[in-house]
Amino acid sequence: MNATVLVSLLGGLKRHLVSSSLLKLLLLPSASALESTMPAASPAARNGEKQVPHAVVMPWPGQGHINPLLHLSKRLAALGFCITFVNTDYSHTRVTQSIQRQQQEEGALAADKMKAPNFNITFVALPDGVPAEETRTCDVPQISRGVVRAAAAFEKLLETLVPPPTCIISDTYVAHTQDAANKFSIPRVSFWTQSAACYAVHAAVAKGVVTLPSGALEANEQLIMNKLIKTVPGLPPLCREDMPGFLQCCDGPDFMFDFCVRPFLRADEAACVVFNSFEVLEGEVIDGLRDQEPGCQFHSIGPVLPAEFFSGSKLSLHQPMNRALAYFPEDFNCLKWLDRWDKGSVLYISFGSLTELTGAELEEFALGLEASGVPLLWVMRPDLLEGGGPGALPEGFEERTKERVMIIAWAPQLHVLAHPAVGAFLTHAGWNSILEGVSQGLPMLGFPYFADQMINCRFIGEVWGNGQAFERQGAGQLTRALVEEKARAIMGASAAGDDDDEARMKEQAALLRQRASQLRDAAREAVSSNTDGSSIKGLHCLLQCLQVLENAESNPHSPQPFSIS
Image (tube, rainbow, N blue to C red; front, side, top):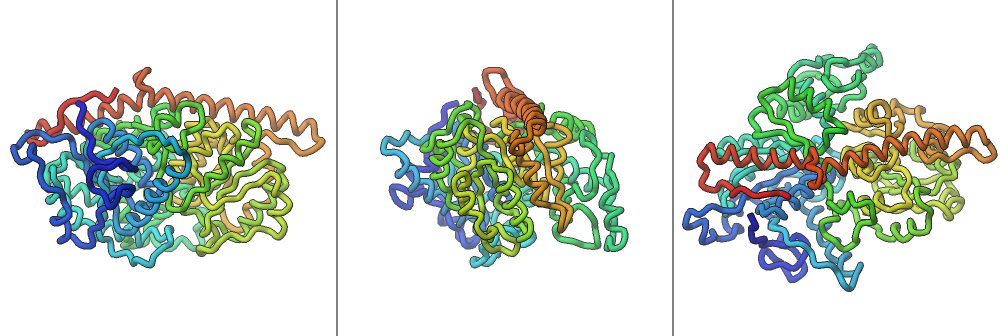
C-alpha cells in the first residue's frame, strides 16, 4: 500500500506548520484543549472509508526511551502509517528543541542538502504536572508520576484524533495506555526499550519467580545482594545487585516498585510485546519468555536504527533518517577531529544522558585514561557530576592531553560510532548504546550506572564476549590503575617497552574485535530484507498481529495489507 504522506518530520512541510522551517508540535496544556487542535475529518473518514493505519505512539519520557520509538515511527511512517507521537510536557519541550536544532544544523551542514523524506508524524504533548523549571533528567520517580498523571489526557486524545487510531504502540512502562486500548477496543503493542534479559528479570519478579527480601537490608545487605539468582530462563546466574535498583528489595508500598512491576502482571493484554533486540543477541532469553508466558506474543525487531547505520560507511550528515533526538546540542566538530586519526585508534567515551559520576570517579577515569596513552573522544555532559554540576577534571589534564584528547558536551553518537577512526566504546551500557556499538562491531567497556546496565555488562563480558566491564560496587572500587589497564586491553595498547605485554594485549583485543565483528554481522543480517532477517520477520509478525486483531474485531478503520520490503 502506498499511502500519501502528509507531514515532514524535518522540513518541506504542507500542514501542521508554525513556519516554513518548523514542525507544528502540538502543545496541549489541558485535556479540554484537545478538541480545538485536532484537524478536521477527511472526506474518506466522513464517508466511512478505510483509513491508512494510524498508530498512537507514547514513550516513557527519557531520551533513551524516546529514540527507539521515534526510529520505529519513522520506519512505519515510511511504510504508510500515520503516526501521532505523544510526549509529556516534560519531554516535549526537549524534543521540540532538538528538532529545531537539527533543522538549523541541516541548513548549515550542506548547501545541496538531500531532500528529506516525508513523514506523516505529528507530535503532541500531554500535561504531566512536572514543574516547568525542572531541568534535571535524573528524577525518575517524578517523571514516572508524570506519566501516570497523563492517563486521562491520553484517553481524551484518543477520543478526538481524526482519523481514529487503529493501534497504540507504547513503552511497556506506560501501562495506562493498555487501559485506553481496552476501552477503545484497539490493539496495543508493548514496546520494551531495554534488553530482553532485563524484561525477563522484571517478569520474574512480578510473577514471584524471583523473590525479594522485605524490610531494610542493614547487616545482611551484602550477603543478600551477593546471593546468586538462577531462576530466570536464558540468563546467567545473577547477583541481586545486578538487578535494576527498584527491583532489589521490597519494603512495603512503593510507587516505583509498583510502577516497574505492574505492567508485567498484565503483559498478556497487549497484542504483542516487541523487543529492540535480535535473535542472535538474545534469542535464548526471548525463547525462555515464550516458554514461560505462552499467552504472550514476543517479537524481536531490532536493532531499530537507521538503515544507513548498517552500511559500513560514514553516515550522511544531512539525512533526517540518520538523526536521533538529543536533549543536549550535538558537537559535529568532533567528526572533523576524528578524521585526523588512523582507523580504529580512538576510544570513544560516553556515559549517556542520565549517568552521574562522583568527583572521585571522574578523577580516577581521567588519570587512568591519561596514563593509557590512548586517543580519546570524551563526552562530558554539563551535568555529569553527581548532584548535577559540571565535571572538574584534574589540574593540568586538558593541557597535558590536548594533542590526543577531545572533550565535548554531547556527540552525534550514531555518526561517531560509524566513523572508521573509532576502535572501541567506553559506555554506561544503556541498551541503545549497546545496540549501536554492537551494530558497528565495536568492542565495549561497560561502566554501569542503574536500570538494566548491570545486566547488560554481565552479558558483554560473560555471554557475548565482545568486551569487558567495570564492577561498580561503591567508593574505592574504581582506580586509575584499573582504568588504564582496561583502556589498554580494549584498544590493544601495551605499556611502553613491554614486549610481552604488547603481545598479550594485542591478542586479547583481537579476540574481542573478532567477536564484536561477528555480532555486527549478525545484527546486519537480522535487519536485512535481502536475507529475510529475523527482525524483518519480527516486524512482519508485528504488522500481521495488528491487522489480524483489527480484522477479527471488524474495525472499520482496519489498515489495508501492505508489504514492508
